[in-house]
Length: 297
Image (cartoon, rainbow, N blue to C red):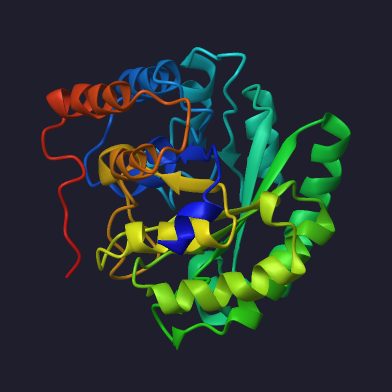
């Protein structure tokens, strides 16, 4: 099996369940239970836990308690806690809540961008520039997301060149890391391979991440494609929570426990306790039994 000789010794898992997972849940999760969930994931050894989103509470009501969550969690010295910020007001709120890491999001699809944030791709970058300038002065770590990097719910397949160019622009404005996102969870291994062939030629592979949803059950196959290209940062959500409120048909994220079972089974280290992750989602589901059990149409 040729790929085995190219496997990394360690991968970094970005746990996105508390943000990308819970934002699309129809169930309201209380602040105290979000806090307990995040704390359990930190204790399990997750090196990065994406906590919440400082979007408008009207747009995403499930994230209305963003400030309270950030102030309530136990901050571990060896864990990074990024939060999503859509604009300068979101950045202000994040900083007021003590956040030291942020994530910005744009799209490889013009149509998705306009439906998602009511702005063109160029307009999203105009919004980002003052945020990035302030973040760099504040010593805040910055991640960028390229959503719909392979498929758009409105226009279909996305050309790799379109996604890569947006990712390059995110690096150019000052992002430390960029995640290429299969927002719909419908990317095939051939699509992911084509995307990464181009991306890894033009950007530093160690600063790229893959954000995979699992609508069609191909996320694990796409992780293998990522590993083959040298990707060592992968996003996942405990329990396969999630979806996207602005992407019709998107189901949950790649489950963290599935990702861990794969990479640990390949002899790759993560520093994360699989049982700890399973306990974190089990504790949440003990209070909210239906959470995360949705299926794409």
